[in-house]
Image (cartoon, rainbow, N blue to C red; front, side, top):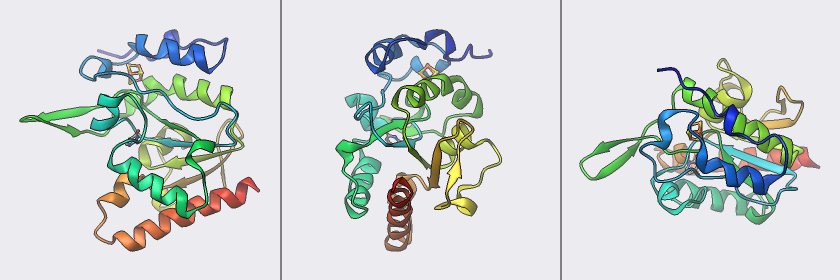
Length: 204
Ligand code: URA
Ligand code: SF4
């Protein structure tokens, strides 16, 4: 069955408070059914920098906050290295509900499909309208699909100054969970931090 998409649940007036209040009602795709909760973006509404990840993971789904699991811990370390205060930036995901497969008692993350990314996009669009970040950090291929289109390749264009269709400056980088899993951790962590430093420089 085709998803209706989130549009009809996204308020087009009011601010972040109203947006957050409406998010749990969303039935824009089927992901709400198995997840514990929708996980809203967090951070100051007037942040100059917005970082966009993929979806909540197991920890985020249970706790109801973005980037509180292993990828979040890595992101925290990288932000510190890059001189970015987590409490100064707005952190969100391209898709607001956790997608997973059960393996025994474990819930294994599954990458959201193209149609789920599209279905959830109105939430991200509205967050961009409300926060109006001067710079968006696009983390990983799901966020890149959502914000830069299906043909964008993070591996080829990471760390460059980009522009989103809405005109915001942006930098693409890998997803922190890819760094967590990397066989060449030190190298990949350093590259991730470099991309975040580029973001800081572009903000000026
Ligand atoms: N990965 C994400 O993309 N977002 C989170 O909130 C946690 C892990
Ligand atoms: Fe709505 Fe997004 Fe959740 Fe799908 S993933 S139900 S579109 S909030």
